[in-house]
Structure formats: structure tokens, C-alpha cells
Image (cartoon, rainbow, N blue to C red; front, side, top):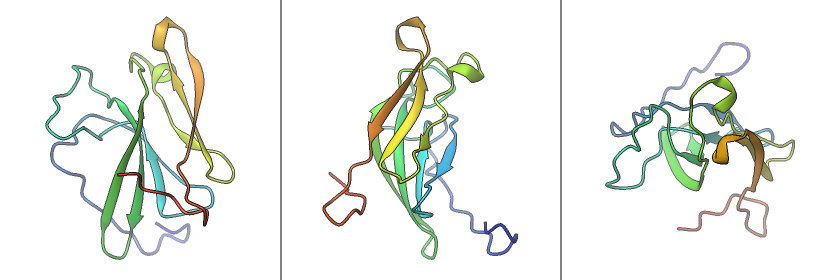
Amino acid sequence: MRPTGQELTEIALPKVYEQYGHFTVGTVHSNWLVSDGYYRENGSEPAGQWGGEWISMQKVDWNRKRIEWIPLCRHESSWMGQDDHPHPIFNDDDTYIYFTSNLGGERHIRRIAVPMDQTGEWENKE
């Protein structure tokens, strides 16, 4: 949705994407999202926690109402409290994603690079 409140667009998630997560929009690219939930590998069962397991990027085509999901890494967070939710965000030029993980019992901020091609566009490595 634009700040003016115009042009609301809603895109349905796949029905099997039922584990909770957060979404954050890219800083430079308004058609990029990052999430800490929902994505599931094909055929996999949920890990028994209510929140998702993956940091994934989404490239959104708002006009066609399509989302391309790209898993980046497992976040290994427990979802036990707000401080243990990954809450992923892009840096100021969409080249890195920062998120929280309590892998090993202590919270840490982790960083992963956004896969880019030589033109500076997001690269799908599938």
C-alpha cells in the first residue's frame, strides 16, 4: 500500500505456508521482501514450532500478484519471545539482511548477503 492509502494489493500465500513470520520491504527495491516465516521446503513437515524456520526473500510482481520465494538460510531461532523472533531487515542499500538468532542459547545478530547478479539485480540461484 502506498503511504497515501491508495492501491491496496493483497497476494495470497500458498496454503501450506502456515508457520507465522514477519515481512519487511526492501529499502531500495519496493518489490523485494524478506521474511522469517511461512516458507517451507517442498514436502517438508513443520519443525513443531509455530514460527517459520527460514529467512527467505520474496521478489514480488505486484501487478500480476505473484511472489517468487527464495530460501536463504535457516535462522535457528526458537520463537520463545519477541527477542527471539528473527525480525529480518534489509540494510540501507538492500545488499545485506540482518536478523536475530538464539542458536546455542544466546541471542546474536546475524548477517547474510543478498545474492546479486552483475547488474545489481537480485539473482535467483535455483
